Length: 277
Ligand SMILES: Nc1ncnc2c1ncn2[C@@H]1O[C@H](COP(=O)(O)OP(=O)(O)OP(=O)(O)O)[C@@H](O)[C@H]1O
Image 1 (spheres, rainbow, N blue to C red):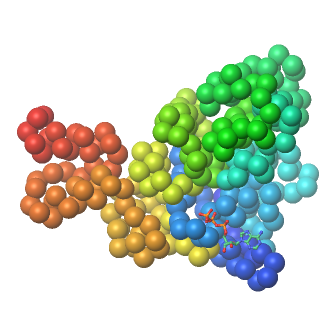
Image 2 (cartoon, rainbow, N blue to C red):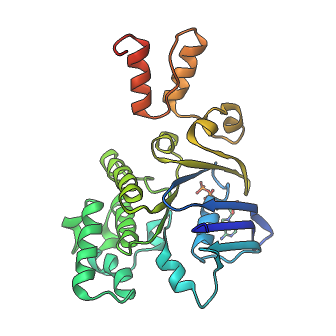
Image 3 (cartoon, protein in one colour):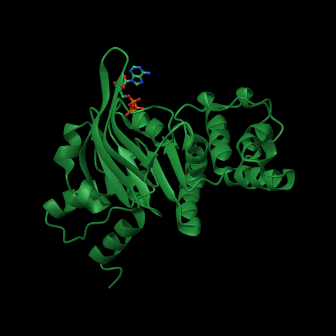
């Protein structure tokens, strides 16, 4: 049984706006899934269905095989943690540590356990020194990190991150990338994320869904999706810069293997230029 599955999911907002049409999505356990698409493709709308923030207009959302109901919504939200695109939608406590403690406290954990979770989560996002600060006075990137900490403190089985690195500085991006990698590998958890940073997708995703105008237009592994530059361009997307450069060199007759991540590309260049066997 898949941890999240949608069957022919459709969502129509007021005003007859069809944001999702016939979406069939599967999230197996222990995978990192990227959802990419241009502005307005429907990514945030889809994410809000994963933990019952929105209700399907048509079709179904199943969490561990069960539809989301009033009775199981609390359990669903413990299983699937959603970090919204805009941290202001999520942060409401007077201090950073109270904000991060809110979820674990609500889950009924004792004070010691809550303290431990808050410490771990704030240290993961590099905000331990911000414990007593007022969240609404933080910068955009700091707020984003508080919002992420608030969800990871609940240790959900599935972490859904809507543009987790938007607005973060380069070290902030590195921290989140490291966290996403560790989170899925160490704890065997599923991470679903959207991003407009295409190089991040190559580094992090086991599987990619490409969305446009409320539907999936392609899906597959990193090589499968990024070997279709025309299709991606037709929906305002691009392939990462490293495979783009390698493709250009190949087309000029340079014998170099394809690489999608920094590490793969580095190996390909070293090999092509005789620095490695
Ligand atoms: N509350 C709402 N009421 C009406 N229309 C909405 C609402 N929220 C989103 N939409 C519309 O639904 C469509 C999908 O929006 P959504 O926010 O899911 O896209 P997205 O892929 O997350 O975009 P972005 O990359 O810009 O964040 C868009 O056309 C948007 O204008």
